[in-house]
Amino acid sequence: MTCGARQPATATSAITNGNLEFIRTTMMALRRRKVAWRPVASETTSMTHAGPHIPASRNQVGTHSPTALLHGLTVDVEDWFHILESADAPQPQTWAQQESRVAYNTMRLLALFDRHQVRATFFCLGWVAEQCADLVREIANRGHEIGSHSHSHQLIDDLGRDGFARDLDRSIEALLKAGASSVKLFRAPGFSLGCGQTWALPVLASRGISIDASMFLAPRAHGGIALQRARPFEIVLADGQRITEVPTVPRKLGNLALPFAGGGYLRLLPWPVLRSCFEASQAAGSPAIVYVHPREIDSNQPRMPLSPLRRFKYYVGLDSTLPKLEKILQNYRFGPLSQVVATTVPDQPVYFSAAGELTTG
Image 1 (cartoon, rainbow, N blue to C red):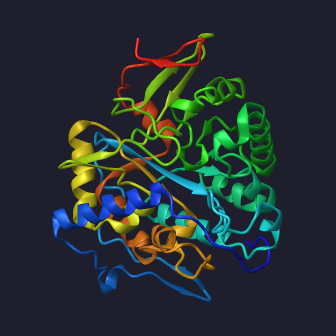
Image 2 (cartoon, rainbow, N blue to C red):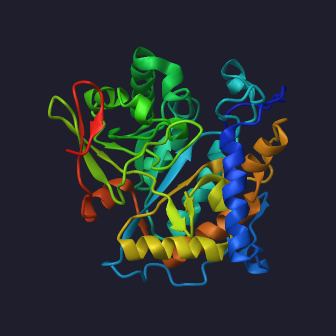
């Protein structure tokens, strides 16, 4: 599966508060634990002309207790150039001319999940579905769940209410046309559904979205929402409709709140820290939501001319992602978000008022 041809990117980017917070938090975690991540030889991942080789599991697949806490396994299906808030990345009008690596890397993730007999939720960009319809069909044919990750990979605020509705409609149409049986789940790019973007909730409900995974329960450069919830919860809209929110919940490590289960944190944090966070989630009955992007397993992807901090955040630990996913899948039980919702005792509901505010009662 291939999509597009390569064209080099240009420009420079600015350092954001989000990048600085990522560096600060993860470095403090590393110093606190005084450990270093060094993949051993048996955990390395190689790529050959015959296709990707993923190291064999050291543990027998399928031995997790059926009563163990079910964590969520999710993939945001986007390409290496789908980066937020950067003039350094290829601009949308050039996307179709870039070298595409999303199909190849997504197939590597599918192979890993097949070996562990685990199913996931794949939040696909509508743009990717238009370019690589066969990839979406392959994901669906392997029994995975498909949700929308928007069409054009823009922050909710940047789209506005009408633009968000149009973008969502286009993504759902593209996913259905590509082979998704239904589209009932959504995750906003950058977890950008925060306190100032709750107007998007009725739009989602009106399009048949029943599960949202866009809320990040910690401060962020964009998005982020101050709700004390540890498990999926219902959002009751003013007209009585309901959406189940599956939030990304940071885990406390001392005085640090670590969104440990995805992105740069998953790549940078050493296994002992990750294991501590997963064990804390297990003990609290709070499902961890792993989120990974296909580009995060690809050390051979084209490099963009980012600022030093942004470059670190975007490219750190690419070679460690597959070995860490291997360990995580060996040690904990995972499934798609609809299954997490169905098997987890819900947290307290939240109410969306006619004035557009979220309240706890």
